Image (cartoon, rainbow, N blue to C red; front, top):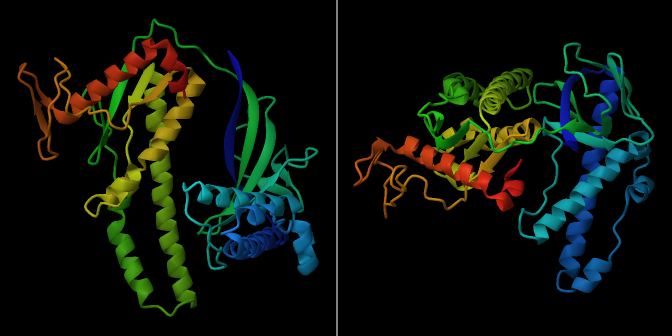
Length: 384
């Protein structure tokens, strides 16, 4: 089955000094138009919030209107300015839906910046070892990189800078891909139960044994942050220490990302049905006892990797219901306990089943995935 898919393609770039200045100028212009457009929207909201009809009928300034007040905005990519205003509009719509908080102003002191531009008339394209970007020109790409899929179309590009001063470009590409279809002769199904100590425990009793990268680097980070607190703000030594701290955090992020990719690829390669539990990560991260572990593990990112890799490989990926009591149900007889405190790590049942509670939960999650596969109506909604 052929299907048009949208994927991201991120690669490091090496702009010249002139191109770096132009990119940084675009970051500043994007920040300016965001802040002024946000100020306008907040003022209109405060004036007309009790009069919905007047509020909806108001016409906000477009980027061409802001260019009258700030002529230097014409020097940067107009698509980047338009995209920023569209993102702000979307943020306000999410605020009114009560799914997100009110948008805030962007600070000049933020070390991480980005802007997005869209493709028009093939103005964003890769030619050999360079990529063409509007208003910037041809920028050198990293040599060792993945090749774009055949007949892929670049829809948009996001240029960003990290806290360590590295520049990247993220391309949104579309291409036609052959998606295999999973038949009923599947042989391998697995369930994953979340674990704070080992990342997850699967239905066969194996643990992922996540290395806890952030926890391992905490001592070194603590020393550096202690030194930073004694430095004069914005001095050379202060900025150098900030760079060192940023490099440590970047290394942890890269290690975590690498672990998630390798682990998800292994699972997709060796199993036909993968089922995981649905967690309220926001509530878990607010718990003072294990908030750091939840952040360090990055379960949401891992789940997203599993989702798209299962989709590309034609495998079934399913998240069980948030309120499914996988830990309380016996994996042998199916009876359910009324209560099961977290301190009780071994599950015992009247039927004689004595098993680790995490393995018991993983088996129940695995069975739920198999049920979904044979339920023809729910299968389409569960395919990633």
